[in-house]
Length: 343
Ligand code: A2P
Ligand code: 11C
Image (cartoon, rainbow, N blue to C red; front, side):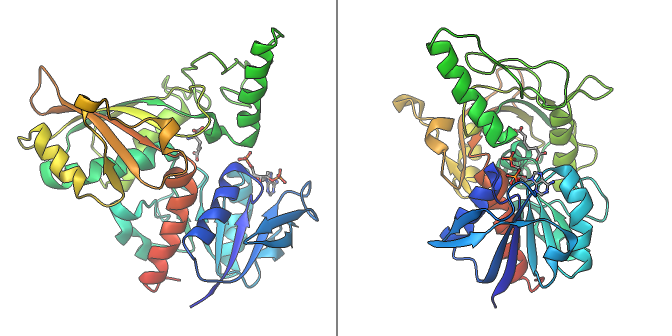
């Protein structure tokens, strides 16, 4: 079966990776259209060696589309995802807009593929930092149970889009040239203050919520509970932006229910789908974002048993935020739906 596909936000950081993933994974495409803002409409875009014209994302653009991959920001999804669904397309939405809606499945196929069956036209792709964490924790939870998660993240600027990648490059050049360093985007474009990310670390991703946590932190907390079907799981998150282009890293502390050893956790992760265990301190082997850029799996290393709690474990989890964290997971959702006759 071949499908009519649309990418909304085709010129963006995630949209570009969606194009690459469709080709790399040989997704069965009957025809494809590339949608973006009116600013880009009429410009050329390349796909699989051919030139296409970018079209403006409008409700009518979704006529005849089977699957629409959205990554153009929450307000675009809010407006156009229901229009696409109304016209018969299955929407796979990479923004946060619909994720916590009760009737919208929030899916990492390795964790909760079954939830896809309940879809009503819109499926949400989780936040990048959530996806890589739950992908690594689910196999541990299946074997040993899970009673607590505390995570600190080290997130790349590409999570904030093409303009943040450019800003990191410009700021690095400004530093090197001894010029004033300008900051206009991070930590959150809509917030009052902006700080340089070059030669810095910013303990704020997205804006603050009323409880003192940022939205990014609350996304990790709420999405983890929803995807894992564990509404009572205690989860705490501190999300931090670092001057890395691509690849989110996470220091994760978990507590499990059953007795387990580091060797047991190694064994579980070695056989887990989509996970690469990279943990050999004798040869200083552990995951780093520089080396996972462009790679599909979620890498896990530095696994240690807590020194005060034998049911506590520390893990270091790294993945390409634009791939498993966004474009790849979206395409894997579409592939799972095809296999399960949901598309
Ligand atoms: P455009 O290039 O025309 O602005 P990123 O996350 O890397 O910043 O990319 C955002 C993506 O969302 C881009 O493809 C951008 O297209 C697209 N986009 C932004 N605003 C709109 C809009 N109002 N309608 C459709 N697409 C939009
Ligand atoms: C970041 N995680 O790294 C964010 C980007 O909810 O999809 C993704 C925001 C989202 O900035």
